[in-house]
Image (cartoon, rainbow, N blue to C red):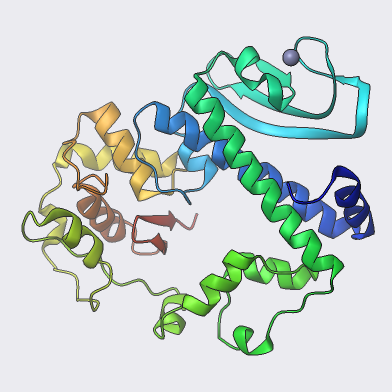
Length: 303
Ligand SMILES: [Zn+2]
């Protein structure tokens, strides 16, 4: 945290309701992601950092983060599991039992009975989220404006659009991302993603990384039957029907629940990933594909 609690409260109070509502939803979503990532990592899953929380949670069967309450000041109305009065109360729910726990962040370890390493990953992640909130509030206070040239491109990313629409400053990492967009960016934004390619040898990590940067190539027409065992087709369709969008998460589910081949690239990406993407893209030609980065693809299937 860069700002004091008072400074933060004061700037937040100057925002309009829509802006505050947006920030509060973002906070929940970011914390959900941090929390789910820490739980998934502990279970041995290799998940790209920017996967959607819904997707990561599909891999978990224990605690998931559901939200928080800010009482405005430390209040006896808002309590930790142990009875201590709180200002901020975090809430989690157990996916299997439905049990709900409400606690202050200091008692994360005590009330959830999770490992110290997980606790520290979650606290670190939550701190980073607070840090970004402060960064934005400070910019807001100093009336920061984006460089118009930077925004002069077709199809700005959705998160950037949300900030601009609401009149909220951009975060440094959003600015950095805009500056780093390759020249091909306009093509990518028009819902175009290059077809997935197959590494042809075992030069693992380099191949895994570079296949995503090479020129797009026409997909092989006969590829549907190659590589992926037919027994995995129905489970993939079931995960998609169940709302899982991330190809990486689908791979992890296939490995855990369907005994799919667990071989991985050095980056941790399962080798079946490419075939899984190819199968999804051929089975659902109407799916819109978002290449999150080199690590994952997210699919939305129209109803
Ligand atoms: Zn407590």
